[in-house]
Structures are given as C-alpha cells and as structure tokens.
Length: 178
Image (cartoon, rainbow, N blue to C red; front, side):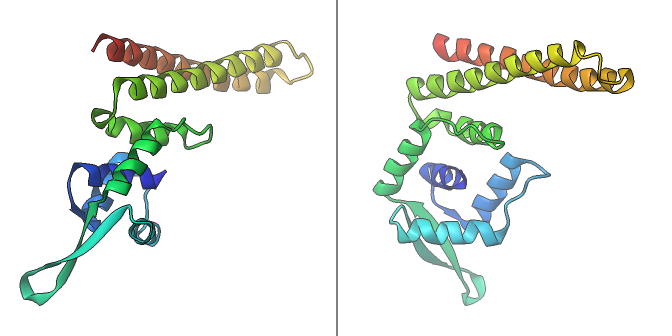
C-alpha cells in the first residue's frame, strides 16, 4: 500500500526521503503514521527492485542528501498498482485515499473503476449493517438496555456508511461528466 504512495509521489518529481515522509504523514492523518523503520526499508526495496534510483545530492557543510527518482520500471509498477483492485481490508479507505491522491495521473477508466469498486464495498457493508440492525431489533432475549445501545451503534454505522455511499456516488457522477 505504501509502495503505491512512494511511487506516486516520485512520478510527480524527484524527492528526498523526508519529503516523501512529510507528504505521507499529511495523507494518512494525525493518528496513523508511518515510521522511518517502515518507510526507509521500503525505499531501499524499491531501489533494489529497480523502481526508483537513488542519487546523492551535495548539501551545505559537505553532507550528502539522498534524492530519489522514478525509473521507467517504477512508472510501470505505479500504473499497475493504480489499476489493481482495492483490497477488502481494514485499510480500504486508506488505499482509496492513496489512489485518489494520484487520480490526476491515470485514466478516467481507472478512476471510475476504483470509485465503483469502493461503492460496491460500501453497499455490501450497508446491507450487512441493515441485516444486523434488524436481527438485533427482533431478538427479545437481548436485554432492552443493551439492545438500545447496540441499535444506536448500528444507527451510527448506517448513517456514516450512507453518507459515504452518497459522496462516492457523487464522485462517480463527477468522473463520468469530465
């Protein structure tokens, strides 16, 4: 997942590792962060696989800074990752955000396929929530106090998912109109 982000950032222009990490932190938000112990081994692996080149850039004081740039193989890998289906996991929203960050660098068809797949995922979840909500509401063996709170929780999940379905549907319409 982070591979897509690194390759995407380098598809725009060459960057230093700390620039990549800064952009990544801004994309994932204040809670979920990526450590240097995750990012730099990933960058090393991408260099080893020939997806990015590393070059040293002189700095004031004689110290060298590592600069990374995308190779043609890296461009092809980025395109593959952007075209790949979203993985149904707890990270699907982050996968979507990473892909959306680079929608300007892929075809309309890829953007549309990604958003339609996310919509299917949301609709699947909404159906699941509605089914569970109905089951909980109809079970007299669940104590009333617990049932009320569980239904409130499902109501929250339903409301949030319905909002996501609406937003995603609007995005699909927007992509189709452009």
